[in-house]
Amino acid sequence: MRVSIQREQTRLLYTAIPFSVVMTLFNAGLLSYIEWPFIQHSHVIVWMTMMIVIAIVRSGFAMAYARSTNSGALFWLQAFVVTTLINASIWGGAMIYLFPHNNIIGQALLAIITAGMAAGSITTLSYLRITGIGYISIILAPVAIQFYSEQHQYAFLLFILTILFYLTILASSLRMYRNTRQNIELSYKSHHDAIAIREAMILAERANEAKSRFLSSMSHELRTPLNAILGFSQILQIDTKNPLSREQDKHVKEIMVAGDHLLGLINKVLDLSYLEQGEFTVTLEDVSVLECTKESLSFVEKMAQKKGITIINNIKASHHVFADPLRLKEVLINLLGNAIKFNRVNGSVTLDSSVDGSNVCIEVRDTGIGIKATDIEELFKPFHRLDTVNNVDGTGIGLSLSQQLLHRMNGEIGVKSVHGEGSLFWVKLPASQP
Image (spheres, rainbow, N blue to C red):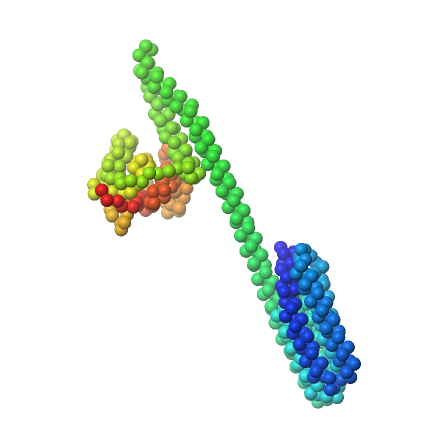
């Protein structure tokens, strides 16, 4: 970071050279013109020549820096510091070689022009502490010394004013240096953070793609032997030549139930991986919410009967949505299954539908255990299961899959819940005309 800050400081300093050179030559010419009547002409010519030479040298360095392919090298910073301090020394030398000892007006004009150069340097040299402080000090120190050594009645007053002026612009230079450095540091940090975020996003996308490919591959690999298990179990059940005993038939049925459950979970994982890879399509058409709900309820009736759950269907026959019927049924089965699994024994599940603007809202309300407010944000994340105490089966995929399916159908899903009192899941989909 230190090298980057130094590189930016160097860039800013060299960027200011053209303006600095123009102002230097202008003020040097003005000073020479003013002091010409009071000082030996040879002194003025020599001083002005030195000023022109250093201006040419600084301009040359600026052009070379602009063409350099290694603009961050320490050499350019050192070259700037040296040429700047030499320039300051020439200005400070004006107070020695061009100082009119017997003319208060000439002294005042010389002091004003020199002080103006010192003040103007704040905007062009304070990007670096040594150039800002060094330039001001080298220029104004001879001014203060000359006025302190003068004998006329105004000399001491001018000396005090010079010291106060020096302290004021010195404080301004330091403040500008600190502000500039802080801005550079913040800019560098923001740039560095932006790069880090981009790199993290790229890594996250790669990891997500790898995860999706893994899930897809594993799901396919698991389905093959599982289908074989289910197939052989069915053969055992229908084999009339070698019929199963009552105990064997019971065990085979348990294998079938467990296999069907596992196959359903594998299919959900496979669907999720397809969605994340963008290899999943939906076919949108006019769908009756009531008919879709009735078909979905047939899949969860036995589960509800086992827990004594009462299902109340208040879905209105007039409500139709523009959706994929198969995927909407999958969403409703997920919501109904959760409402039953996380419900109380002998509880209830209520389905309602209503029109919300251009959408139809489908609600699934249960009287179950509810969801903590701190857990709601995690609810739709893949493989995140909220209830681990009651050993409710599942992988935590259903809600995440439902959310992504609804997004593909231009819909949305949400939840309202009070812990200990139950939950209400709602689904919104674009309404269509029957």
